[in-house]
Image: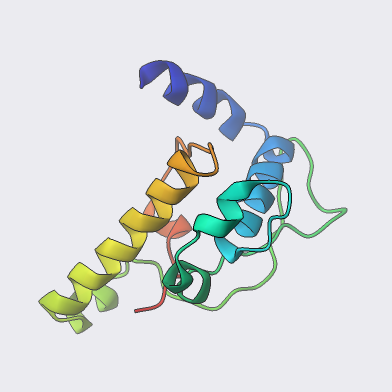
Length: 124
């Protein structure tokens, strides 16, 4: 696991690489990826409940990546924690876990920097 994390952490410093990975995750979780059979294994609820913003072409460099606007609230936001009941929080955690597992085990993409700011477009 540390070997994979080390590789991913180094790539996290390169926004060109991160934008490519982001696009692979977006395609893989949308069920639109025609280059892999993982497409057929995407659960419908991930397709409808998870939105991955896309990098804007021409605005990504080694040091910077601009993403399309995607409304949402970070799962680390205090309002999310306070306004969801236990069942809703469990449901949200289930979606996050499923989306993460799908990207790792079906798409082969490991994110070495999962933080609440990256987890805002999952709907419950």
